[in-house]
Image (tube, rainbow, N blue to C red; front, top):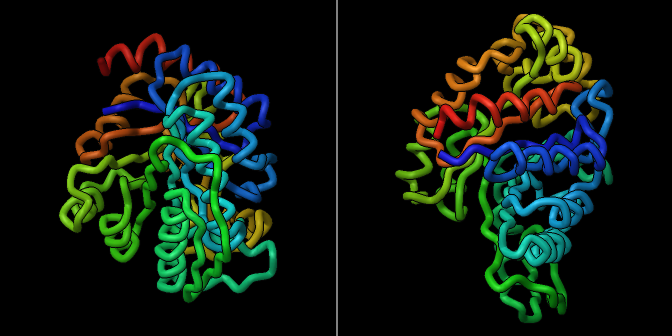
Length: 316
């Protein structure tokens, strides 16, 4: 199982993200995830850089593979534009770039005033968007007049030798089935074997399955819990709220129902090596091929050091 590091654009400045990427490579992590948001989940997180600028910069500071976790190619940015962005990223990273996509959240996609569609419509839009991008990556002029998107006389000139793989995020049965049918890989965040099995049996076969989890490095579990609750209380917000709430203030209101001790269910808090290994083991047993760990809070260097000294050597 490949172990990677998750760059949280919602919480760190672009310079900090680049420094984390350098540190992750030195520590022995094998790949990077990076989030794609217009807003953070809460104001306490405090950042939300334009991911494509950061991805370009990453190509100049390390040579780790990069996956967006995940980009929504349907509402905020037209898939024809994202096809160009992903192609350029793949060229800069010399083929070590994966476009992870999903059906998105209102938090990021409502900003232009577009209606936020129901789940079935969002998945339909996602499928059409992926088709548009793949057609543009063939290098010819594209004219597309679909149900959701129009492209006229468009051609992407700067292309990698091989089109970037598209990994599709899925949490419910319909999105997992879509990922299995059209994705080059699968993205999730829960260590649920049933989801991996549904993807593989539904047509995904032996394609890569990626997942990620969050940690809050600190001297004690209680201190890690406090940091996680301060920065990411939205991790305890249940159900479909994460897809439909439109602003950080709404997440902050919903998070008032979240208790600090709930963070121990959503995060690996503290610096206990066995706790990190146990979390990684859950994903391995669920059948994931790659797992990415994100730190929240100011102690990200401590997490990198912990993995370099103790976690990664014990895994290998």
